[in-house]
Image 1 (tube, protein in one colour):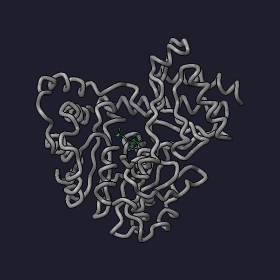
Image 2: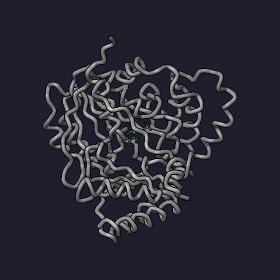
Image 3: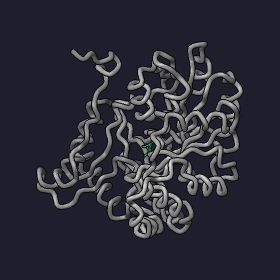
Image 4: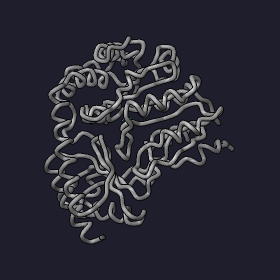
Length: 366
Ligand SMILES: Cc1ncc(COP(=O)(O)O)c(C=O)c1O
Protein backbone atom coordinates (compact mmCIF):
# COMPACT_ATOMS: atom_id res chain seq x y z
CA UNK A 1 0.00 0.00 0.00
CA UNK A 2 1.18 3.50 -0.77
CA UNK A 3 1.72 5.45 2.45
CA UNK A 4 0.86 9.13 2.50
CA UNK A 5 3.02 11.39 4.69
CA UNK A 6 1.15 12.74 7.75
CA UNK A 7 1.47 16.35 6.68
CA UNK A 8 -0.22 15.50 3.36
CA UNK A 9 -2.92 13.40 5.09
CA UNK A 10 -3.77 16.43 7.19
CA UNK A 11 -4.14 18.86 4.27
CA UNK A 12 -7.60 19.99 3.21
CA UNK A 13 -7.97 20.19 -0.60
CA UNK A 14 -8.91 23.57 -2.05
CA UNK A 15 -12.66 23.93 -2.07
CA UNK A 16 -13.76 26.04 -5.00
CA UNK A 17 -16.79 28.26 -4.47
CA UNK A 18 -19.75 27.96 -6.81
CA UNK A 19 -19.19 29.34 -10.29
CA UNK A 20 -21.09 32.51 -11.15
CA UNK A 21 -23.23 30.62 -13.70
CA UNK A 22 -24.03 27.84 -11.23
CA UNK A 23 -25.03 30.33 -8.56
CA UNK A 24 -27.25 32.29 -10.94
CA UNK A 25 -28.98 29.10 -12.07
CA UNK A 26 -29.47 27.68 -8.57
CA UNK A 27 -30.81 30.84 -7.00
CA UNK A 28 -32.63 32.19 -10.05
CA UNK A 29 -30.62 35.41 -9.90
CA UNK A 30 -30.16 37.76 -12.83
CA UNK A 31 -27.13 39.62 -11.47
CA UNK A 32 -24.15 38.19 -9.63
CA UNK A 33 -21.36 40.37 -8.30
CA UNK A 34 -18.15 38.74 -7.10
CA UNK A 35 -16.10 40.87 -4.74
CA UNK A 36 -14.40 37.95 -3.03
CA UNK A 37 -10.91 37.54 -4.50
CA UNK A 38 -9.41 41.06 -4.60
CA UNK A 39 -9.36 40.99 -8.41
CA UNK A 40 -9.31 44.11 -10.58
CA UNK A 41 -12.93 45.01 -11.46
CA UNK A 42 -11.76 46.77 -14.66
CA UNK A 43 -10.58 43.48 -16.16
CA UNK A 44 -7.08 42.96 -17.59
CA UNK A 45 -4.85 45.85 -18.68
CA UNK A 46 -5.83 46.61 -22.33
CA UNK A 47 -2.15 46.76 -23.26
CA UNK A 48 -1.72 43.24 -21.86
CA UNK A 49 -4.63 41.98 -23.96
CA UNK A 50 -3.06 43.53 -27.06
CA UNK A 51 0.27 41.90 -26.31
CA UNK A 52 -1.37 38.48 -25.92
CA UNK A 53 -3.12 38.83 -29.27
CA UNK A 54 0.14 39.77 -30.95
CA UNK A 55 2.07 36.91 -29.41
CA UNK A 56 -0.45 34.08 -29.53
CA UNK A 57 0.98 32.68 -32.79
CA UNK A 58 4.22 31.93 -30.90
CA UNK A 59 2.42 29.68 -28.43
CA UNK A 60 3.96 26.54 -29.93
CA UNK A 61 7.30 27.67 -28.41
CA UNK A 62 8.28 27.03 -24.81
CA UNK A 63 8.41 30.09 -22.60
CA UNK A 64 11.76 31.66 -21.71
CA UNK A 65 12.70 29.92 -18.42
CA UNK A 66 14.78 32.92 -17.29
CA UNK A 67 12.02 35.40 -18.20
CA UNK A 68 14.76 37.58 -19.69
CA UNK A 69 12.55 40.31 -21.18
CA UNK A 70 10.27 40.52 -18.17
CA UNK A 71 13.09 40.67 -15.63
CA UNK A 72 14.90 43.32 -17.70
CA UNK A 73 11.77 45.45 -17.80
CA UNK A 74 11.29 45.08 -14.07
CA UNK A 75 14.96 45.78 -13.50
CA UNK A 76 14.69 49.14 -15.32
CA UNK A 77 11.52 50.11 -13.49
CA UNK A 78 12.80 49.23 -10.04
CA UNK A 79 16.44 50.20 -10.67
CA UNK A 80 17.70 46.79 -9.63
CA UNK A 81 20.12 44.42 -11.38
CA UNK A 82 18.25 41.74 -13.41
CA UNK A 83 19.96 39.07 -11.27
CA UNK A 84 17.96 40.40 -8.32
CA UNK A 85 14.62 39.58 -9.94
CA UNK A 86 12.77 36.27 -10.11
CA UNK A 87 9.44 35.70 -11.88
CA UNK A 88 7.13 32.68 -11.55
CA UNK A 89 3.50 31.61 -11.86
CA UNK A 90 2.03 34.01 -9.34
CA UNK A 91 3.45 35.16 -6.05
CA UNK A 92 1.75 32.14 -4.48
CA UNK A 93 4.21 29.94 -6.42
CA UNK A 94 7.05 32.18 -5.31
CA UNK A 95 6.06 31.80 -1.65
CA UNK A 96 6.16 28.03 -2.16
CA UNK A 97 9.61 28.28 -3.78
CA UNK A 98 10.89 30.45 -0.95
CA UNK A 99 9.84 27.84 1.60
CA UNK A 100 11.29 24.99 -0.51
CA UNK A 101 14.59 26.79 -1.07
CA UNK A 102 15.32 28.21 2.37
CA UNK A 103 13.89 25.68 4.83
CA UNK A 104 13.39 21.95 5.21
CA UNK A 105 10.66 19.64 6.51
CA UNK A 106 10.02 20.22 10.21
CA UNK A 107 11.57 23.73 10.25
CA UNK A 108 9.69 26.53 11.92
CA UNK A 109 8.18 29.42 9.97
CA UNK A 110 7.02 32.46 11.90
CA UNK A 111 4.17 34.76 10.91
CA UNK A 112 0.95 36.30 12.13
CA UNK A 113 -2.47 34.82 12.58
CA UNK A 114 -5.08 36.49 10.37
CA UNK A 115 -2.77 36.74 7.40
CA UNK A 116 -2.60 35.40 3.83
CA UNK A 117 -3.95 31.86 3.68
CA UNK A 118 -1.64 31.00 0.74
CA UNK A 119 1.38 31.27 3.02
CA UNK A 120 -0.20 28.95 5.61
CA UNK A 121 -1.16 26.41 2.93
CA UNK A 122 2.31 26.41 1.37
CA UNK A 123 3.91 25.95 4.80
CA UNK A 124 1.55 23.08 5.67
CA UNK A 125 1.86 21.26 2.37
CA UNK A 126 5.64 21.29 2.59
CA UNK A 127 5.52 19.90 6.13
CA UNK A 128 6.85 23.04 7.87
CA UNK A 129 5.73 24.07 11.34
CA UNK A 130 3.92 27.41 11.44
CA UNK A 131 4.17 29.65 14.48
CA UNK A 132 1.44 32.30 14.30
CA UNK A 133 1.29 35.37 16.53
CA UNK A 134 -2.18 36.89 17.09
CA UNK A 135 -3.03 40.22 15.46
CA UNK A 136 -3.38 43.30 17.68
CA UNK A 137 -6.89 44.38 18.74
CA UNK A 138 -7.02 46.75 15.75
CA UNK A 139 -6.19 43.90 13.35
CA UNK A 140 -2.58 44.87 12.68
CA UNK A 141 0.52 42.72 12.79
CA UNK A 142 2.01 42.65 16.28
CA UNK A 143 5.57 43.14 15.05
CA UNK A 144 7.00 43.45 18.55
CA UNK A 145 5.63 40.08 19.67
CA UNK A 146 6.62 38.51 16.36
CA UNK A 147 10.21 39.70 16.84
CA UNK A 148 10.21 38.38 20.42
CA UNK A 149 9.05 34.98 19.15
CA UNK A 150 12.11 34.51 16.92
CA UNK A 151 13.98 31.47 18.20
CA UNK A 152 16.84 29.28 17.05
CA UNK A 153 14.29 27.16 15.23
CA UNK A 154 12.90 30.07 13.18
CA UNK A 155 13.97 29.87 9.54
CA UNK A 156 11.63 32.27 7.71
CA UNK A 157 9.35 35.12 8.78
CA UNK A 158 6.43 36.06 6.52
CA UNK A 159 4.90 39.55 6.57
CA UNK A 160 2.33 40.90 4.10
CA UNK A 161 2.16 44.69 3.81
CA UNK A 162 -0.70 45.55 3.30
CA UNK A 163 -1.92 42.43 5.02
CA UNK A 164 -4.62 40.25 3.48
CA UNK A 165 -7.44 39.93 4.69
CA UNK A 166 -7.28 43.02 6.93
CA UNK A 167 -5.64 45.52 4.53
CA UNK A 168 -3.76 47.01 7.49
CA UNK A 169 -0.19 48.23 7.05
CA UNK A 170 2.97 48.85 9.04
CA UNK A 171 5.08 51.99 8.54
CA UNK A 172 8.65 52.40 7.33
CA UNK A 173 9.84 52.99 10.88
CA UNK A 174 8.03 49.88 12.14
CA UNK A 175 9.62 47.82 9.37
CA UNK A 176 13.09 49.25 10.08
CA UNK A 177 12.77 48.52 13.81
CA UNK A 178 11.59 45.02 13.04
CA UNK A 179 14.35 44.20 10.57
CA UNK A 180 16.97 45.34 13.10
CA UNK A 181 15.76 42.62 15.46
CA UNK A 182 15.94 39.78 12.94
CA UNK A 183 19.18 37.76 12.98
CA UNK A 184 20.92 37.58 9.61
CA UNK A 185 20.35 33.80 9.37
CA UNK A 186 16.57 34.22 9.43
CA UNK A 187 14.94 35.10 6.11
CA UNK A 188 12.19 37.73 6.01
CA UNK A 189 9.60 37.57 3.22
CA UNK A 190 7.85 40.87 2.64
CA UNK A 191 4.76 40.27 0.51
CA UNK A 192 3.74 43.45 -1.32
CA UNK A 193 0.84 42.13 -3.41
CA UNK A 194 -1.24 45.27 -2.82
CA UNK A 195 1.45 47.93 -2.66
CA UNK A 196 0.18 49.96 -5.64
CA UNK A 197 -3.11 50.69 -3.89
CA UNK A 198 -1.50 52.31 -0.86
CA UNK A 199 -2.16 56.06 -0.79
CA UNK A 200 0.93 58.23 -1.20
CA UNK A 201 -0.02 60.22 1.88
CA UNK A 202 0.63 57.20 4.11
CA UNK A 203 4.02 56.41 5.58
CA UNK A 204 4.45 53.12 3.75
CA UNK A 205 7.74 51.32 3.08
CA UNK A 206 8.71 50.23 -0.41
CA UNK A 207 10.45 46.90 0.19
CA UNK A 208 12.92 47.55 -2.62
CA UNK A 209 14.58 50.17 -0.41
CA UNK A 210 15.16 47.68 2.41
CA UNK A 211 16.82 44.85 0.52
CA UNK A 212 19.54 43.11 2.50
CA UNK A 213 21.09 39.65 2.74
CA UNK A 214 18.05 38.14 4.47
CA UNK A 215 15.10 39.86 2.77
CA UNK A 216 12.91 38.81 -0.16
CA UNK A 217 10.16 41.07 -1.45
CA UNK A 218 7.30 39.61 -3.51
CA UNK A 219 4.89 41.35 -5.88
CA UNK A 220 2.14 40.20 -8.23
CA UNK A 221 0.44 41.05 -11.51
CA UNK A 222 -2.80 39.50 -10.23
CA UNK A 223 -4.33 42.52 -8.51
CA UNK A 224 -3.65 46.04 -9.80
CA UNK A 225 -2.60 44.82 -13.26
CA UNK A 226 -5.68 42.63 -13.64
CA UNK A 227 -3.85 39.45 -14.64
CA UNK A 228 -4.89 37.01 -11.87
CA UNK A 229 -5.82 34.29 -14.36
CA UNK A 230 -2.47 34.49 -16.15
CA UNK A 231 -0.43 33.76 -13.02
CA UNK A 232 2.58 36.09 -12.91
CA UNK A 233 4.37 37.17 -9.77
CA UNK A 234 7.91 38.31 -9.08
CA UNK A 235 10.40 38.68 -6.28
CA UNK A 236 13.36 40.96 -5.52
CA UNK A 237 16.32 39.79 -3.47
CA UNK A 238 20.09 39.65 -3.51
CA UNK A 239 21.40 37.45 -6.37
CA UNK A 240 22.78 34.83 -3.98
CA UNK A 241 19.21 34.12 -2.82
CA UNK A 242 17.58 34.38 -6.26
CA UNK A 243 20.06 31.96 -7.84
CA UNK A 244 18.92 29.16 -5.52
CA UNK A 245 15.24 29.79 -6.18
CA UNK A 246 15.86 29.09 -9.87
CA UNK A 247 16.87 25.56 -8.87
CA UNK A 248 13.36 24.74 -7.61
CA UNK A 249 11.31 26.72 -10.14
CA UNK A 250 9.38 24.82 -12.81
CA UNK A 251 11.36 25.68 -15.92
CA UNK A 252 8.73 27.09 -18.26
CA UNK A 253 6.70 29.29 -16.01
CA UNK A 254 5.15 31.79 -16.28
CA UNK A 255 3.75 30.87 -19.70
CA UNK A 256 4.99 32.84 -22.71
CA UNK A 257 1.66 34.70 -23.04
CA UNK A 258 1.77 35.57 -19.35
CA UNK A 259 5.28 36.97 -19.70
CA UNK A 260 4.40 39.25 -22.64
CA UNK A 261 1.16 40.31 -20.95
CA UNK A 262 3.06 41.26 -17.78
CA UNK A 263 5.60 43.32 -19.74
CA UNK A 264 2.79 45.24 -21.43
CA UNK A 265 0.78 45.68 -18.23
CA UNK A 266 3.62 47.16 -16.23
CA UNK A 267 3.87 50.12 -18.58
CA UNK A 268 0.10 50.64 -18.83
CA UNK A 269 0.11 53.75 -16.69
CA UNK A 270 -3.34 54.89 -17.78
CA UNK A 271 -4.84 51.59 -16.65
CA UNK A 272 -3.08 51.74 -13.29
CA UNK A 273 -4.25 55.32 -12.71
CA UNK A 274 -7.87 54.27 -13.51
CA UNK A 275 -7.53 51.25 -11.24
CA UNK A 276 -6.37 53.33 -8.29
CA UNK A 277 -9.04 55.96 -8.83
CA UNK A 278 -11.85 53.39 -9.09
CA UNK A 279 -10.59 51.60 -6.00
CA UNK A 280 -10.65 54.80 -3.98
CA UNK A 281 -14.18 55.63 -5.16
CA UNK A 282 -15.56 52.16 -4.52
CA UNK A 283 -14.06 51.79 -1.05
CA UNK A 284 -15.31 55.27 -0.11
CA UNK A 285 -18.86 54.23 -1.09
CA UNK A 286 -18.56 51.01 0.88
CA UNK A 287 -17.16 52.77 3.95
CA UNK A 288 -19.94 55.37 3.88
CA UNK A 289 -22.57 52.64 3.86
CA UNK A 290 -20.85 50.61 6.58
CA UNK A 291 -20.53 53.72 8.76
CA UNK A 292 -24.20 54.54 8.22
CA UNK A 293 -25.42 51.09 9.24
CA UNK A 294 -22.73 50.68 11.91
CA UNK A 295 -20.87 47.66 10.63
CA UNK A 296 -17.26 47.84 11.80
CA UNK A 297 -14.40 47.38 9.34
CA UNK A 298 -10.63 47.46 9.24
CA UNK A 299 -8.45 50.44 8.41
CA UNK A 300 -7.39 49.06 5.02
CA UNK A 301 -4.88 50.56 2.58
CA UNK A 302 -5.48 47.91 -0.10
CA UNK A 303 -8.26 47.19 -2.66
CA UNK A 304 -10.52 45.55 -0.09
CA UNK A 305 -11.59 45.91 3.49
CA UNK A 306 -12.63 43.45 6.14
CA UNK A 307 -15.97 43.82 7.88
CA UNK A 308 -15.95 42.80 11.54
CA UNK A 309 -18.96 41.12 13.15
CA UNK A 310 -19.71 40.28 16.77
CA UNK A 311 -19.56 36.54 16.23
CA UNK A 312 -18.46 33.88 13.78
CA UNK A 313 -22.08 32.83 13.36
CA UNK A 314 -23.12 36.34 12.33
CA UNK A 315 -20.20 36.67 9.89
CA UNK A 316 -21.19 33.36 8.32
CA UNK A 317 -24.89 34.23 8.09
CA UNK A 318 -24.03 37.63 6.61
CA UNK A 319 -21.89 35.99 3.92
CA UNK A 320 -24.61 33.44 3.09
CA UNK A 321 -27.39 36.02 2.94
CA UNK A 322 -25.29 38.24 0.65
CA UNK A 323 -24.68 35.18 -1.54
CA UNK A 324 -28.43 34.51 -1.67
CA UNK A 325 -28.79 38.00 -3.19
CA UNK A 326 -25.98 37.44 -5.70
CA UNK A 327 -23.16 39.19 -3.83
CA UNK A 328 -20.15 36.90 -3.39
CA UNK A 329 -17.95 37.87 -0.42
CA UNK A 330 -15.20 36.02 1.47
CA UNK A 331 -15.74 34.86 5.03
CA UNK A 332 -12.14 34.77 6.25
CA UNK A 333 -12.44 32.16 9.00
CA UNK A 334 -9.84 30.04 7.21
CA UNK A 335 -7.38 32.95 7.45
CA UNK A 336 -7.82 32.78 11.24
CA UNK A 337 -10.40 35.58 11.62
CA UNK A 338 -13.79 33.89 12.17
CA UNK A 339 -15.58 37.24 12.70
CA UNK A 340 -14.25 38.77 9.46
CA UNK A 341 -15.85 39.06 6.01
CA UNK A 342 -13.75 40.55 3.22
CA UNK A 343 -15.08 42.63 0.35
CA UNK A 344 -13.01 44.12 -2.46
CA UNK A 345 -13.64 47.22 -4.54
CA UNK A 346 -15.81 46.94 -7.64
CA UNK A 347 -16.98 48.97 -10.62
CA UNK A 348 -19.50 51.70 -9.81
CA UNK A 349 -22.38 49.37 -10.70
CA UNK A 350 -20.96 46.50 -8.70
CA UNK A 351 -20.39 48.72 -5.68
CA UNK A 352 -23.95 50.06 -5.83
CA UNK A 353 -25.23 46.49 -6.04
CA UNK A 354 -23.05 45.54 -3.05
CA UNK A 355 -24.18 48.52 -0.97
CA UNK A 356 -27.82 47.63 -1.62
CA UNK A 357 -27.34 43.94 -0.77
CA UNK A 358 -25.38 44.74 2.40
CA UNK A 359 -28.08 47.16 3.47
CA UNK A 360 -30.87 44.61 2.98
CA UNK A 361 -28.98 41.79 4.68
CA UNK A 362 -27.99 43.90 7.67
CA UNK A 363 -31.54 45.15 8.09
CA UNK A 364 -32.58 41.49 8.37
CA UNK A 365 -29.75 40.23 10.63
CA UNK A 366 -28.93 43.07 13.01
C1 LIG B 1 -0.98 38.93 0.28
C2 LIG B 1 -1.07 38.08 -0.94
N1 LIG B 1 0.04 37.53 -1.42
C3 LIG B 1 0.03 36.77 -2.52
C4 LIG B 1 -1.14 36.51 -3.18
C5 LIG B 1 -1.10 35.57 -4.35
O1 LIG B 1 -1.16 36.25 -5.52
P1 LIG B 1 -0.86 35.53 -6.89
O2 LIG B 1 -2.10 35.60 -7.68
O3 LIG B 1 0.27 36.32 -7.48
O4 LIG B 1 -0.43 34.13 -6.62
C6 LIG B 1 -2.34 37.04 -2.72
C7 LIG B 1 -3.59 36.73 -3.40
O5 LIG B 1 -4.66 36.87 -2.91
C8 LIG B 1 -2.30 37.85 -1.56
O6 LIG B 1 -3.41 38.37 -1.05
